[in-house]
Image (cartoon, rainbow, N blue to C red; front, top):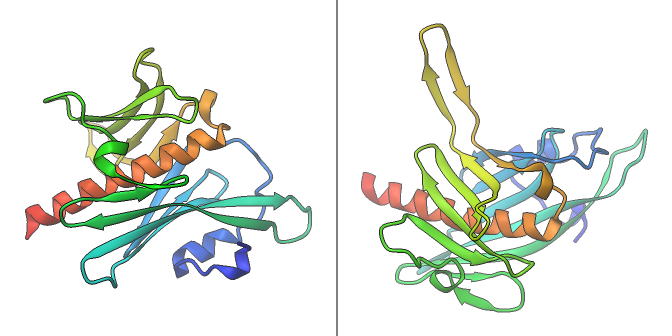
Length: 209
């Protein structure tokens, strides 16, 4: 799908056309939240992923995860992009399903709760390594389940007041440099994070109603 074939939300569209996107380095994805839409933006201001949720269905919501790929890097022109739909998450009342790859599977089978009282979920990465997202006081951490190596972490936006200053923290996913250029792993990070973020969002919404 080419860029002209897809119309993201107005706030996302403003960022998509940002020039000077030739750098391949990406260690942080800043999360911009709008109604029914998320943009994941790299430090150059380039939208790398969008997550759009359609709430028009009667019994379930559908979140679509798309990846933005820059196809050329001109010097005096608007960059060209290819947009690929990489996953769909079907939020249902009793069971949630994800289409990531060739088939739809239940989220509880894809992101498994296999440790009691551990507040974590595990999945198999693109290289068949077991990976685990775990809740921390400051958000979520993704690590190799065996080596415990840190792969990525997500922290929500927050503002803290210290003795000397007010410190702010952006809503962002931070990816360790060793994994930042692995596109298949990045897709898996974003899709699994989107599921967990949706679960947390729906849990908070239920607690406030």
